[in-house]
Image 1 (cartoon, helix red, strand yellow):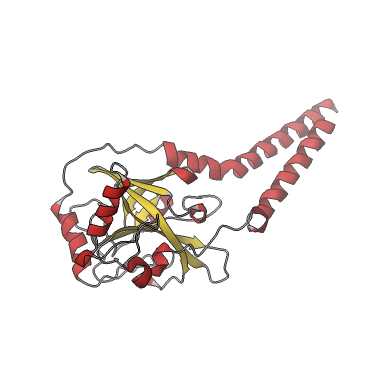
Image 2 (cartoon, rainbow, N blue to C red):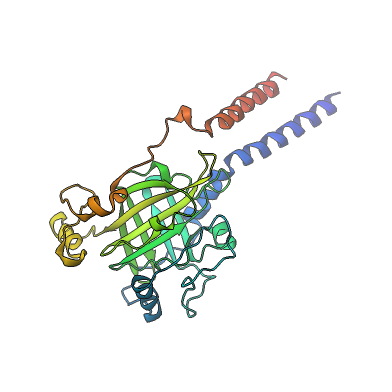
Length: 295
C-alpha cells in the first residue's frame, strides 16, 4: 500500500514540475533572449557602402513592405537587401530596459528569423541611423514567445537602444498606433527624420490588427539644447521639429500627428485577456499543492 502511495506521489510531483515548467516557459525564453545572446561591441568604423546605398534608394524611390505575420513568401519590389550582407547572421540587437527586453535583429522577417528574435521588414531602412530613414522591426507577441508582447506598456520618452557592429543608436518613444495589416503608409520614411518603428500583432481585437510603436533618434551624450538643435537641423528647410518633451512645435504635429500620439493605453490588469488563464493556473496549482500535502 505504501509503495502505491509513493508511486502516486511521485507521479503527482512529476506532473506538477512539468506544469510549473510550462507556466514559467515564457519567462525562461525571455531570459534566454535577454542574456544568452552575444553582445555586439562598440566600434566606430563606417557601415558598408552597400548598406548606405540601400537606405538611400529607399529614400529616393517608392518602397513596398510586407506583413511579416501573414504571407512571408512575398518579396515586393525594392525589398531585397544588399547581397553582401548575410541574412542568416545577427545584424544588431535591440534593447528596451523598461520591459527588460534584449533581442537579436535579423534582416528579413522570415519565419526562421521571427522564431529566433526580431527582424527588419524588407523594404524598410537597415538600422544604422541617418536622416530620412525608418527601420521597421517586427517580432512576435504571445505567451510562449513573448518577445514584443510588452510593447503596449511603453510610454512617450521611453528609451530604445539599437547596437550594431558600428556603435549604438538611441531612440525615444513618441507614440503608438493600432493599424490594419495593409496600412503600410504608417511604416514609410518620414522626411527629414531618423525613425525607428516597432511592429507586432495585436490580439485584443477580432480583426487581429497590428500594433506599432514610433520612436525618434535621440542623442543622450549631448545636453538637451544641443539635442534639440540636432532635431531641428534634421528637418529640411529649417522647419522646427517637435521633440517628445514638447518644447518645440513643428511639422510633426501638423503633417504626422500620429507620431506623437499614444493611441493605445495599456488596459488595467483585470481587463487584460491573459489574466484569466493565469489566475486559473495559479488556483489549480494551489489546489494541487493542498491535495499533495493533505496526504
